[in-house]
Image 1 (spheres, one colour):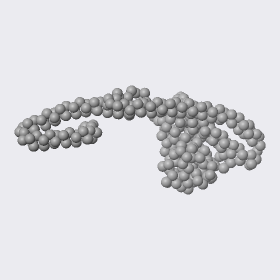
Image 2 (image 1 turned 120 degrees about the horizontal axis):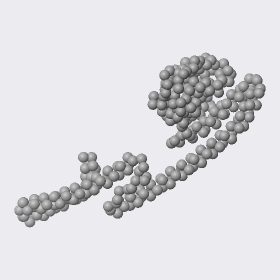
Image 3 (image 1 turned 120 degrees about the vertical axis):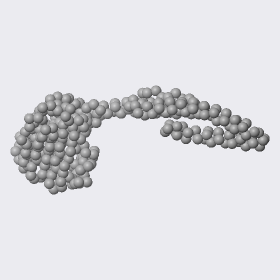
Image 4 (image 1 turned 180 degrees about the vertical axis):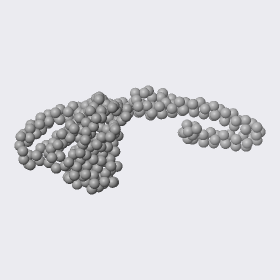
Length: 327
């Protein structure tokens, strides 16, 4: 029914023209005092001929419409053949569409090549910049003073931002470097905690974690990245109290007693570049941490949930999917 309405609308001018012609014939025949039956018979013949022509035209219209609709629905529409043109106007549109498809295909190839080059560049840059960072870290670790501890913490932040650059590009790839294997969740958590142990000590924050026996079939590197980002956020916005990690069934929860998140900011904290009230208070906030965490969770098939209250703290829960979970 929908296609018929579209067809009638498309040929509205022809329909009106046919009605005008039929009226003209009827008036002329009546002026010549022809019998009514003759007039009606002529109109009927014209109507039948128009109906047959319209039916054939509608079937062609329907075939091309459905073919074009399949092109819109298919993911590979750029490679599928276009409907054959039946008139010069359609031929022009077909040629124009084909030209646009070729331009789009060339743009896609260029985008993939440029993105691949950019990823190669940043991969090389990250590995190169890690060398001076490691040298500075070793140098600072050889001194025991508050000033050197402060510099060491800032150096760790630089290192984390450098790693985020590479993660940002890799997570945007259609097929990131995921390696699914049996992972000891406790080992991943403890490794992340050890990385931030100096900051716990410097800020005099208490860590609460009892350990876990859980094993998950997932990607160890990206799960570690998620844990590090969650711990980093907790440490960043917590000045006193504690940070706790709890594991129940398939869920890992990182909680803190920090400043919390404003209710209006909670729905948007996973948006790229969104910093909210806390981010505006901290001028160094990039708004990328939780955005990358959300993307990493999506790649792993994990769910993520945030509960927060201003002035009391925040809890972030990552739930591993059942389909890749193993006891």
